[in-house]
Length: 310
Image (tube, rainbow, N blue to C red):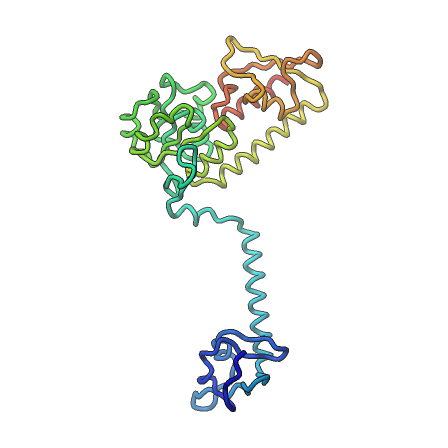
């Protein structure tokens, strides 16, 4: 602490000092603290606040204690407020966001802070958007048809065939949700219509999080995953300790049952086996929801198939 001053200084003389030395060698920073607590002389002139010669003490201990108490109370209040309110997503959705995805993994694609007019390029994007509380302005699906497990949920959504870029542009979307595996070749054309976010792979939970981020609804996507965990827990409770193997009842095999498929992962999550000789047989009627491209809505329907078969 510099000590080059001579004699006693007024508050006016020391208002620009970085700090003032207190008892115990501590410092009070900012001259505003002095202005707040030092007494004033009659006539409005600043009082002398202490001796600033080297090692001198300043009689501001009470002021410093008061300041510390106020700061501590403010910090406690801020912490309590954060714990009560959680993450305030509304502040983040007031401005455009950048979303990193399969075809723009480094810089990210700028999307609206809170998308209201998404266009879905697949059943997963269609179902996820609706589950997240946003009705798409349209969906481009294979054959121009909605899968059975989405028909009631997607009622009223205009559906067009895949690759109908004119229809997609006419819908006026503010963001487009697609998949690299199915829509990657048209990415450059699609992003000229609206910001386009591409998922990659068939992990529906990761894709749901990506869709939630693209729509400005990350909290909602996490709530959907918590709800999923609760649904799985109920089905596992119904299964209990039974050793069961699953046989799918379907007119024609419409889905993959390989080790990394959606079907096998769901069975493993429930503690069920596939094509195992031992154990009780659980016959499950399965449809397109087991393909694994249905997002959270398709996953829920597949889980319901298991629950119905028990």
